[in-house]
Image 1 (cartoon, rainbow, N blue to C red):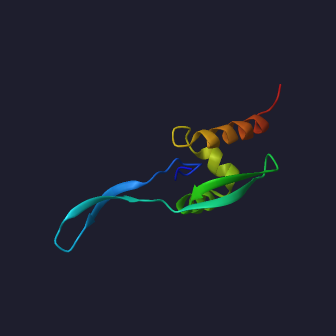
Image 2 (cartoon, rainbow, N blue to C red):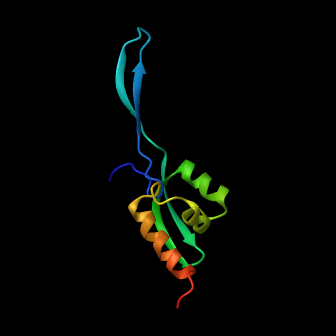
Image 3 (cartoon, rainbow, N blue to C red):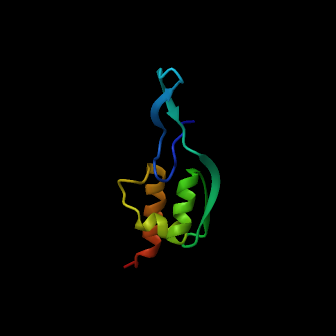
Length: 96
């Protein structure tokens, strides 16, 4: 399982470990992933996702999972999040 946020698609960052002698060695800075279940109010459904801790703070800032998904752009969301977003938009749109 790769270490990627299911909602935002955030991945690791790369950089250098610098020793006292100023030797530089490549390394990875992994993201802080958490397994959470997020409740969608419009779908009355829970989604089990692996998201970054920073994404959890962003969701609460936007006022909930549904508002976060709807307001975020499609280019920033991962494939799993896009499927959830389409489900939510389908239920929110007035049916003809």
